[in-house]
Length: 305
Image (cartoon, one colour):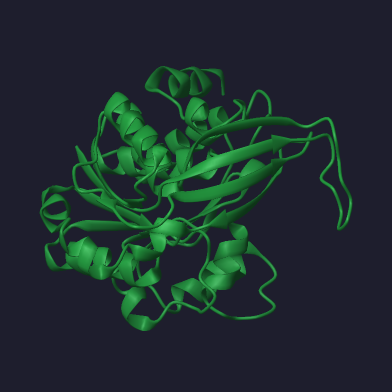
């Protein structure tokens, strides 16, 4: 069960406050923490915790953040031999979390801007050896495209987590390189460039006009919408979260768990339920890496549902 991830690594600098400040307002009394982040790295760690053999490609600087990143990947069993070290700062994300657990994030990409298609080419052997490629848009779109192209060339299934959604709609070639798409509700509305889409079902229908793979639109506490070829789109209820503390890592936990479940051969409904439980666990734990579930965490939530 091998998964290749081409994605981001960064450091999350998190401030928790009772209420997010408005423009020109200073709020005191917050609690600060720092930790590992980047959607690609988060997904790689989550997939490894759930039993996959994972290889990661990203780009980091030549700084202390990069040293800490390699320590994390070694501890979590993520193969990071191909990670590029470049002359730029490691990505940093500043995260504000309010009392309800909702978050706002600002990112300085740094080293990720030097993750080029040529760097992705050095990862081809890992993609060839994988059962599934996972990538997303926290890295430059040309790098994600190249990863998808290599996977398609070698018959490797692909999963695109289009987060954050790119400024421009996906072109026809990119759509044809994707087998599994996992946007959240806002991303699903942006991917097609069609204005005025009023519901996840309308977004899924717009995506279907461009794309013939599987779409799983995550809807937070409302569960998700499945649109698979040959069937009508259908809603799948959420696995209840016992509490909501921090939603930051939930999407990454969901995507990684879905990838693991599909690679090991779960049917789609079981895979989505497994992924939903991963996301439900993640929202109940502060900070991303501590929130990423292990198999027993997911089993406990599924048993209680």
